[in-house]
Every structure is written in C-alpha cells, then in structure tokens.
Length: 523
Image (cartoon, rainbow, N blue to C red; front, side, top):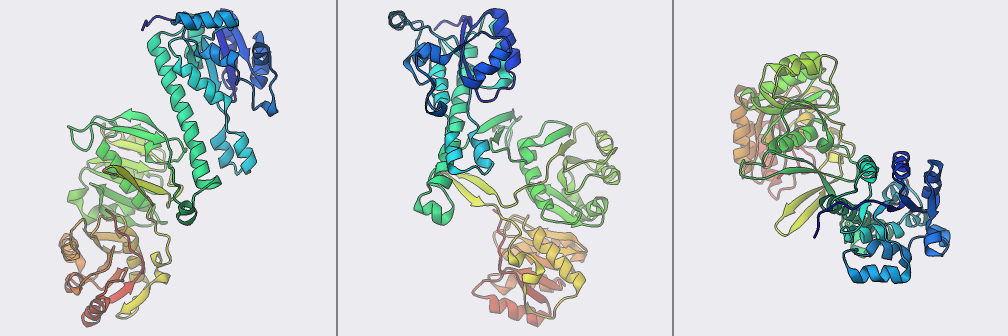
C-alpha cells in the first residue's frame, strides 16, 4: 500500500460540537476545498465564509424524520467507501456520477451528557447518533482513500493538512484508529445504558449488576516499569470523568511509578476515612502510621511516631491543605510522594527543595462507595467499594459485649482505630492511642500472628492502648495476646461461632469488648 499524501479537495462535515469550526473554515476557504455539510453545521460554516453544498443537494433527498435521516444515502456512503486504488470502484463512481470524499469531519450527539443530565428516556434515545457512526466507520475503513477527523483538538493539524498536501497513510491510519475508538466508546455508552437502565435483565434488576459491562480506557502515560523492573506498565483513565489519583496534577518531582500509584491510592483512600485533619503514611499499601489531630502538622508527627523506620521512603496523604509547618516536617524525611487537596502558600517551595519528591494535587474522593474492579484469570471481579458508612461503623451502633462502658476519650480512640483498621491488609489488628496508630499488625494469615505483630510494633505503647480487629476472632487466643499486652478495650465485628469464648476471655481479663456487626476485610 502506497504511503504518499492525499490532498484534501472534497470534505463532508457534520458535527454536534461546533468548537474550532472557525479555524477549520478559514483553511477550507484558503485551500478552495469543496465542502458538503448538514443542518446547523452548514449554517455555521456559511457564517464563517465557506461556500457550503447542502447534503440534500448531493443526495437529491431532503433531511427527514426530524433529522434522523440526512446522510444515510448511497451517494454519501459510496463517496466515503470507494477505494480509489480499485479500478472497479472508480468505474462505478463514474458510472453513477458520484464524487468521492477525501475528508470526513464528524463528531457525535452527546449521549453520555444527555443521560447524565437526567433526561427522559425519549430525550436520551433521540441522542443516539446513527448517521454519524455510520459515516465514521465507513471513512475509517476506507482510510486508504479518506482522512477522518473526530476531535476538535485535531483541527489545528487538519487546517495545516488542508492548506498543505494532506495526510500520508500512517497519519490516516492513526486518524482511523481514533475514529473507531470514538464509535466504540459511543456504542459502549449506549449499550451500558440499555443494560443497566432502560432494559436490565432480571438479574440486573435484583442485583444492580448489568449483563453487559462496557467501558473504554485511554492511555495517559507509559510508566518506567511495573511492580518490578522486568514488568511493563502504563496508566489509563476512564471516560466517565471521575476525579481521582489517575487524573491528579503533579506539581513537582520525578514521574510517578507503578508502585507509587498503588501506595498513593491506598493512602488517599485511607486519609479520607476521617473528618478531622488526618495524615496517613503508607508503604507497600499498608499503613506505617495514621493519625488525626487539630492540625495536619500535629497529625503527621503522631502518624510518623507509630513506625519511623517504615515511614522512610513512604507515601504521605493529607486530607487538608499541606501547611508550611507540615512541609518543613516532611522535608526532613525521605518521602516518595505527598498527595493533598491543596498546598498553602510556600509549602510547595519548601518541599521542592527535594528534587525527587513527587507532589500531587488531587480532588477529594467524590464517591466513597463507587465500584472497584480486580482482574482474575480469564475474567474480572467487580464489587462496591468498601466504605465506612454502615450503622456499625459509628460508635453509637456498637454493642458492649464485655467489661464496663469506656469513657468518652477511650471510645473516641476505639472509633479512630475502627476507621483506621479498614486501611490495613487482612488479617489486621491495629492498636491506637490519642487519635493515632501505635502498632499495626497487617497481612498475616492468622489473627494470632496479626495481634502479636501489632503488639510487638507498639512495644511499651501497647499497655493502655485500644485495639481494632478487621474481622472476628475465631478463637480467644488472638484476643488474649492483646489483653496480656495491656490493651484496655477492643472493637471487632463479632459473628464467630466462638464469640462466647472470646467474650468470656474479655470478662476474665477485664477488657471492654465492643461488637460492630460489620467486617472490613482488605485483600
């Protein structure tokens, strides 16, 4: 296949989004391009000085059915689909007196935006574009002869191509790829709406999970490597416009790595489990320390004190703007990433003294529930995201199973520990005091070892602390490790067949024991 340029002498333009048309119109006029267009697009181009041929003049057929049928005609599609390298195609065009198109510029009705606006069913259906995708697919298939442009962001390059010698074949292939991605994304949005809203099957009605799941992701960066240097990695973002870490603004530092993203995501999610000023320090997706305080600088000092050794090279997330005082503290410690919703004046300058530290500006999570995906061999698991929004996630929803009711300060620490343990990989035991973690036992294959690890990490701080367990104690032994270390109160979900044994151990130890009725496994 030849790779030469094809001049753009005849164009078909039909767009919903009229942005950038003035620039394009000027190029059409300068180059003397013959322009065929439809409806309001034709009116707009004419205002910008383009001599437009209405598509109805080409087809000999008026636009009908309220605009549903405009371009669905052989004189349009033959002009887009004729492979000009093929003598038979060229002969057919000559016989039928059909002029080929060199360029198609189309973007589609705003279906996603219409649905998101709360439009009625009929309004949404009316925004399902038919003629546009048909033309895009035709021109993209025939990219050997036709250039196709779908994004106003490409109009600058298109204007240059119009004034110059057109596009070469590799460029037309890339434009065709974008066109197919555009129609695929559009069809995915329509299919998802039908499957989840307009026509869900019985399972979807009962469970909320549609029988068809369709989405498109766009690469935003290629990462240096994956979890390990021998693995390739890239970052993709979805088309739903969700805010989050993937779209965070980097203010300073080296490019983000794969592990930076996974740790920062865990930290960002963790810190927004708290309403008070909070700081989370994360390493390998587990907390080195989490704390709340009157200021973020105080919270950072408390979080760092939990495990200063592990905090070296960690990720720090803050749920308030980073203050100058906090920036000065962080600057003294080797830190991979800092992520926050904002930075007070002077804070970025202080942190930027470290050339490698990555500073991210990220919008707070908008939808704590949401849906999360995990790939498994041959498929994908979806679940609603774990959130601290059940009745058992607040202290007023707990039941006291053993010991005396604790005082207000202790109850506040228990509430903090319960929210913090959600961020710890299971099996998880977390010790806390004064609104801060003092010992974290994470990722153990039994709850006894998790308790031992938390107590060991806390050292002398275990005595008088409180503890949270992300799931029930299957036997009293794990609980007993905490009681023997001097933990004065424990919160756990309950629900074990041996709950009574654990309650008996708590009574015997004089430890107050609360059940939440809610589990927060994290794998």
